[in-house]
Amino acid sequence: MVTATLSDVDLRQRAWEIAARVVDPEIPVLTIADLGVLREVAVHDGRVEVAITPTYSGCPAMNMIALEIELALEREGFRHPKIHTVLSPAWTTDWISEDGRRKLREYGIAPPLAASSRRALFGVQQVACPQCGSANTELLSEFGSTSCKALWRCKSCREPFDYFKCH
Amino acid sequence: MVNMAAASIQISETPLVLYVLRRADDALILGHRLSEWCGHAPMLEEDMALANMGLDLLGQARELYGYAAKVEANGNDEDKFAYLRDVGQYRNLLLVEQPNGDFARTMVRQFFYAAFADLYWRAMMRSSDATLAAIAAKSEKESAYHLRHSAEWIVRLGDGTEESHARAQTAIDDLWAYTGEMFWLDDRERALVDAGIAIDDASLRAPWLKTITNVVSEATLTLPTNNWMQQGGRSGRHSEHLGHLLSELQSMQRTFPGATW
Image 1: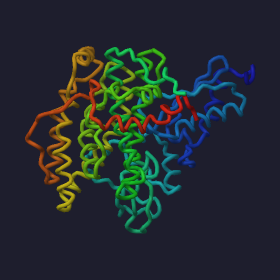
Image 2 (image 1 turned 135 degrees about the vertical axis):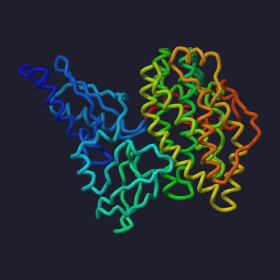
Image 3 (image 1 turned 60 degrees about the vertical axis):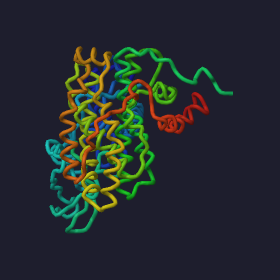
Image 4 (image 1 turned 180 degrees about the horizontal axis):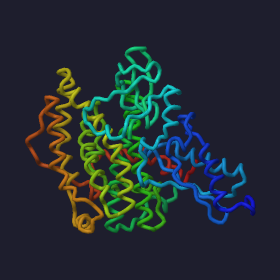
C-alpha cells in the first residue's frame, strides 16, 4: 500500500487531487474535474475507487480518460486503482465549473448556455463569439468536431468557432 | 476452419432481456445505417452530424446490451449480442433497418424514429428499473438533438426545391407503413408495463403524431392517409435488408471468430 501512516481520508484527498488533474483528451485545457466528469473518489483499506460519468453515451474519450486516471494513480503509488462508470445522475453541461467555462472561452470554444434552453425544436440561441465577443453569430452545424460540440461562425470577425453544446 | 460453436449464441429470453435487446437492436442498427454515410454525405457538416448521431446510438446500444447481458447472466456480453446473432435473432424495428436511400430518405427515417425516441426516453426516465431510468436520462438528451436536427431537414427539404420536395414526399410515403411497429406491444411487454418497468409505447402514438404532423405541414409535405402498418422486426421477421447489413457489421467476427484487437 502507498503508506501505512496515511488514513483513508488523507489518501482519498490525495487520490482526488491526482485524478482531478487528468485532462480531457479532446479538450486538453479542461481537466475532468472542470468538466464534472469526475464524480467520486473513495478509498477502502488503501485501495482507491474512482467513479466517472460520460458526457455522451458514445463518447470515445471515456476509455482513454479511465486509462489516464489509472496511470496517474499508479504513478503516484496507488496500486490497482479501480475506475468505474456511473450513468445516474446524467451528466449536464451545468456541471462545468466557472473556471472550466473561462478556460473554454480562452481556448476558443464558446461555453454552453444553461441546459434549460436546449428543448426548443426550432429555438433561437444566442452564442457569443469566443474570439471577439460579438453576439452576431450563426450556427453552421449542430454537430461539430466531437460529440459535445457544435460548429458556429462569427459574422463580425468572420472566424468559425466551436460551441460546447448545452446538454 | 470455421468455429461452428461460435456461429450464433443462445439467449435465455426472459421478458426483460427481450425488452432490452429490442431497444438495443434499434439503436445499433440505426447507428450502423448512419455510419454508412461516413465519407458520403452531401456536405461535410452533415457527414459529421450523421457520424455523431450514429455514435450516440452506438453508445446507447452498448449500455443496453451490457444491461441485457447482466440481467440474462448467461455468459453473453455486448459483443456477442452484436456479432453472434443471426438475422432472425435480431429484434429491431423494421423502420431502422431500411436502406439509407437518398439523403431525404435517411432524414425521414431519422425524423420518424427520433420523434419517437425522444418521447420514449423521456417517459422511461420514470421506469422503476434504476438502470433503464439512468440510460433513459442519458439518451433523452441525445434524442432531443437528433429530433431537432432531422426536423429542420424535413422543413428544408420539403419547403425547398421541387426536387427535394418530391424526394422527401416519396420517402414519407414509402416509410410510413413502418412507423406503426413503434407503438406495438406484445403480452410480455404488457407485463413489464404493469410492473412499472416499461412504458406503454402505444400511449406515445398521439404525441408522436402531433410532432410529425406539425413539422410535415410546415414542410409543405403531407402524411399518407393509408394507415395499414407492417410489423415483424420485434419478432425477428425482417426485411431482406437486415441480413445484408449484418453481413457487413459481423464480417470480422464471422471470418475470425473470437478475434480481438
